[in-house]
Image (cartoon, rainbow, N blue to C red; front, side, top):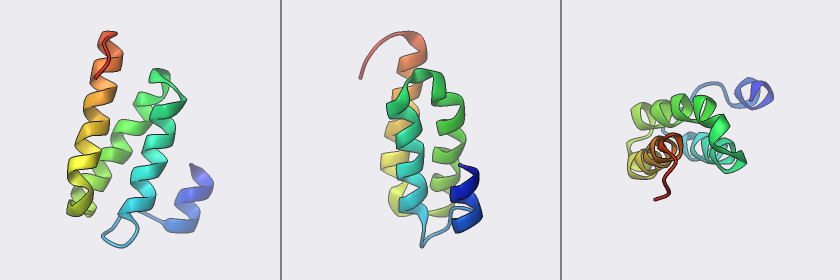
Length: 71
């Protein structure tokens, strides 16, 4: 993530997609990485409204994963 944020800075309207997929990669690595993924999803929601529905799904997946259920 450090390399990615050094290259792309913070999430914004132009790079929100990149950060969405970065958060997804954390989520797909396992529920243990939800603590890393959720803040990125939240940044995407704030910075790139077009990606909000997808980021909200990621947050919900993490919430369900921590409860031990699947979407």
